[in-house]
Image 1 (cartoon, rainbow, N blue to C red):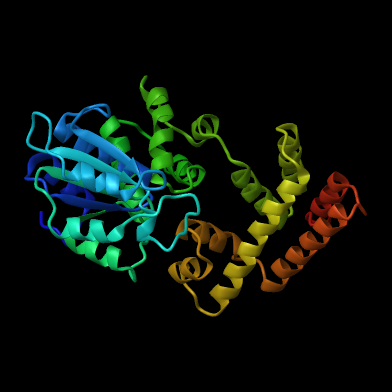
Image 2 (image 1 turned 30 degrees about the vertical axis):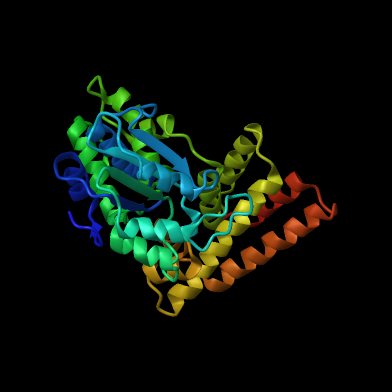
Length: 345
């Protein structure tokens, strides 16, 4: 494993566990489940706990970089190497931090050019993109072994979860699996956390059905409003009003529900316009700056509805929001009126 290149995660984990370690690692990406796998691999390789003398962790939004360099240049206690974790290195991004320490990057640049073999420094950049224009970023990527823990693509998440289910002997219907993906927003970290509930349920040989997923995996307000949007578009008045009443009973505010509904319909309208001019899922996701899976769901929902219909719906929601906030109409009455207006004739 040589510095200056990007390693696929599974190969990197295997190398951390079994091969000679390098002096500097740079872990880039916001997928926390994958990031934790890297952390665990290093801690197990060193057989250290977080209070061990040969382990130190630094938060770059609180601790000065000089402390990292000083620790890296210190000899290990009763061992061959020391392990250092460097968290939240905002200086590798374009982000500004007003209350963070002023870091001396020159000394750090000098260190990474000639790091000590007795220290293994692991820098966790919890972002999916660094500022490549910065000298520190360029030099660090040359000096370090780069490990990619960015969020996986849909196909990779599906495959990873299907393999996890197979390893655990969990039987799940296709319909249940697709719902599970939607309720966990295709986020691997969230899915692996919620998978614990399915493991417990399936421990007695139970098959996971769509109904079981609905019982075990909580719906967020955004998930409920996604269904509410679908009911409104299809003219399913009774389903839409039932879901709306359920949300009110759960303590949700009509204004908040309406705001998310506006956001959802705006996304459908944007997807419809971009699809019309030939944009594909990846292009739309990049243009709008949102997760490709959300775009996929929006594209599916927008199909069958005209651009004018979605634009009119969006304008009506904006107008209703104004009427409520200006005190001209009762919020619950107006929302119910809106749903009834769009019911099937």
